[in-house]
Image 1 (cartoon, rainbow, N blue to C red):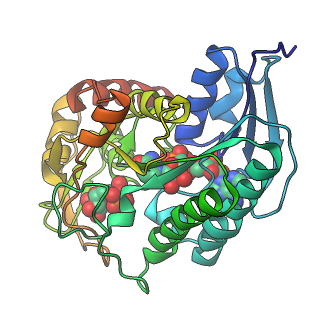
Image 2 (image 1 turned 135 degrees about the vertical axis):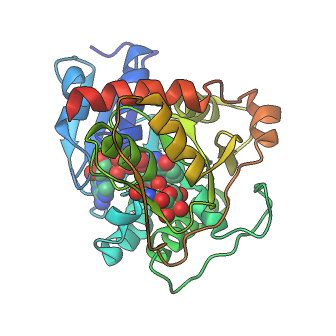
Length: 316
Ligand code: NAD
Ligand code: UDP
């Protein structure tokens, strides 16, 4: 049943890692949720507990095809996020980011809805500026194996800004830095899930390169808080804004922390070839998010890893 104040919120990619957490949180806040997904990397298991809720609707659909819906807000998350998955069919990754985002912006225009675009720290590429501020234009290889995702996401940001300037569409753009937590796919290929699953199975921990490259890891609950704050702000602040945890670690340090948290693991660290164009460093400057949204992450890596490990123990 929809009352007058109740918002209808579309979450594309809602059956994926981040999307499933957003669905759950926004449903808990009393909104009507439409979860739209083509199940390329998402799964029904991620949204199973929400399926019986009368305010939750699942639509199996690909955002590269137009769709017409009556909604108040759109969180546009549909897109594979792990390098392994987005490189599997790079042309489809570009199509999802460009044609898919275009379709969602057309929907926002038609429905007079606000659209929040899930952009990424990858728009900074292999950055020369460190930490990365929103004003940095980035260092992206436009013909490399990561560019289907990086350039796709950069074009999606362009589309959002142009729909805003040209058509007055209400947009919000968040640049998400490496995020981890429950509901990540165990074979997702991203570093946190890989290391935890390897440690739990007593398999070798695979560090790519020498392990001195850095990333800054954010726990999922902090990200969800930031995304909702950004969507709800009515100060005229459309972004882009960085959402990430500025605590920076080398990949070797991450491997050591995972092994320390799973003390019974017999896993040993092994070194494999570094993928092409793998960024050497990444750390968000989050002063803008703090100043405009009063947001900053609360959960330390050690605490978040414990929660993620509990989840993977249950599912593998
Ligand atoms: P995920 O792979 O778990 O989720 C992506 C979801 O989108 C999946 O459910 C997938 O089935 C769906 N999807 C993919 N293509 C689609 C299409 N054409 N039509 C409909 N559904 C489609 O990834 P995630 O980590 O939850 O990432 C969600 C969003 O956040 C992505 O846009 C990603 O680029 C962005 N992001 C994530 C991170 C991170 O660290 N997790 C960092 C930066 C940006
Ligand atoms: N990585 C690694 N071992 C793995 C998976 C990833 O050493 O099993 C490295 C990867 O080369 C990169 C970092 O960890 O330097 C983060 O990789 P991820 O795919 O999680 O995200 P992204 O590169 O998009 O930040």
